Image (cartoon, rainbow, N blue to C red; front, side, top):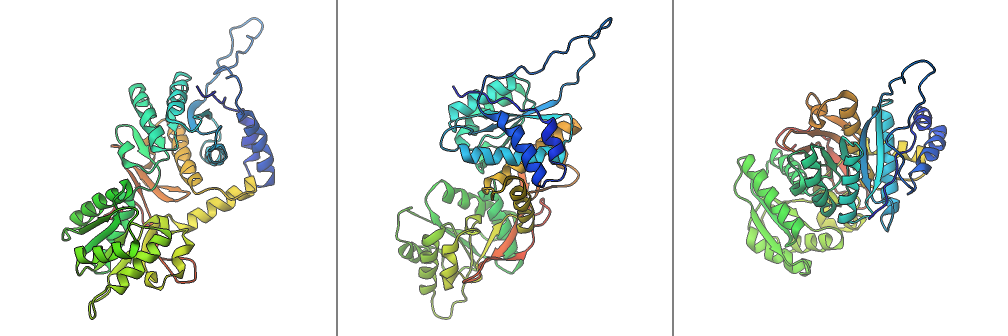
Length: 398
């Protein structure tokens, strides 16, 4: 069973975080040193009563638990997410809220044990765990205890009934890019993707997005995950026919070769389809060398918000955070706001979205997470450029 990681004393780090500069880093790292696995401390420390009177009441902070892989192969990732969580805590709750790190060991069984221990220790919100498999083991126990879960996975199947996923889901990505393409005049859509869990999720999302927009039923062409990309492009061309926009569910070198094959098979005189991709394309340098992908659109987190988050993180910890750290920041900030205000988790975004590290986000009562995503265009030989800023989530494209 993974060893619980006690929550550190937060008074000194709070003072250090006031400026988020060099002094912040020094103070925070001293606080995080207490996060190394060790025997758990009591939930409170007794205070000797004053002479001649009853003990003074001690207000206990509202507690959230962060379920993270603090040992094992994923420990560096877990530490970075813990750092981001503390940034959110100091931003959102200067007092009265406590985060208690709990080590999952990076396994579903470890996550389940960590969640149960955290709930028994009084956690009122669970932040994490990291993966879909871990979330599947955590959420039933949390639901039974009435404790909400803000998981980092992008598997929408884990959402609902008191559980939200903070990763950018296939549904969010597809709805956003389809809405943008439809506003640009596209009516007939097609999907070409590997026949994997991700590809099938894209297919479900595309059918739903086009239906909601009143567009024709899209053509779906799924191919084996090991199929030659050029051959898969030819098969997709035959299945899709003439379409206005094609969503490609591949990434990296496979996406590049697929796009080249699709373009080569375009019948003479047929208007080219607008090529669309997924958020996986945002940090994919292999795509920049393919002329067939020039101008292709894909959704992604708000670049300006992400840049601000990364700059603050680097200032505090002297390193660039992994992408998943932004989801940790958003989840932790939402939890801190809920505990600070005493409202349900979904209530903190009822009036307006939260301006998160990856752009605006809104939680709905049924467990649905809405994210405002920007639209990027690939620029051959250069970085992707934003063609549409991230909107407030809640419209046809979230």
